[in-house]
Each structure stands twice: as C-alpha cells, then as structure tokens.
Length: 185
Image (cartoon, rainbow, N blue to C red):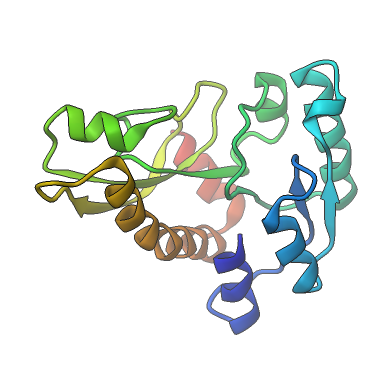
C-alpha cells in the first residue's frame, strides 16, 4: 500500500487513493496511511458474525466512493463470491507465486519443496475462486540453492512493489472498462 501511495504522490501512477480500508485495528499500514494524510477506515472483521456481514460493511464504504479499482495490498481475507461479483473486473490482487502455481498460503515453501528453479509474484483480477483470476502481470525470481521460504519471500517481496505499480499503470492507462473486460476473457 505504501509503495502504491508513493507512486501516486510522485506521479508515477496517475491515480488517487480515495480510501484505505483495513480489517485489523492497530495494523501498521493503517497508521502509515493516516500519516500520509490518506482517508482510512478500520472495519474489524472480528466484530462481525460472518464473512458475508463483514463484506457488506466493506461494500457500504466502497459504494460511498465508487472506486474505479479496488486494490488488495496486504489484505489477507478471502472475499465472498457476492462481494467479488458486485465489483467484478474492478478488484486486483498481488499473489506471491507464479499463478496458476500455488494459490493460497505458503507459496514459497511449495515452490522450494517442488524443486522449482524460480518463483515470483502475479498480479491478477480477483474472481470468486481463490487466486484463479486472469493474470495481468508477473515477475520471476530465481530460487537459489540454500533458499528458505523466508529468504525467497524477501527477494520476491522486493520485486512485488514494482510489479504491482506497473500493473496498475497498465490498468489506468487503458480505458478501465475495456481493460477489465479484456482481463476477464
């Protein structure tokens, strides 16, 4: 989120962050967003009786601003199919693997265990199926002998910020409606 905010501030991304939503009170990212003067909302998922009711609260906040894009950056909750369908073609996520390989968690360990020679990250359109939406950008990172999931994760993370910004710029420079429709084909 901070890398995207800096890219917007510096003009690398011709975009404006309208709202930062966080589901965890006290998360460092929310304090950092506030320090940058960004509008923030904390919607604590733990206070909702269900995933659907949490997603409805998020949806209500998003409807107030009707964003062109919803960018998931460090947001570690699975969204309901209803939420994803409501914002279909307008939600992007970054995932630390070369999708379609290794959706879900523990991606770096999966790549090491499989004997892969490279890992990476993917920016994709969010669909109701976890990490299965169309990939719009990827970066590859070699797996080095002796890599652990932590050392590999650090090298992938170093590339993720640049990748996400480039993918967002691609989406913003295209007509957003046709770009989203093209990504969903």
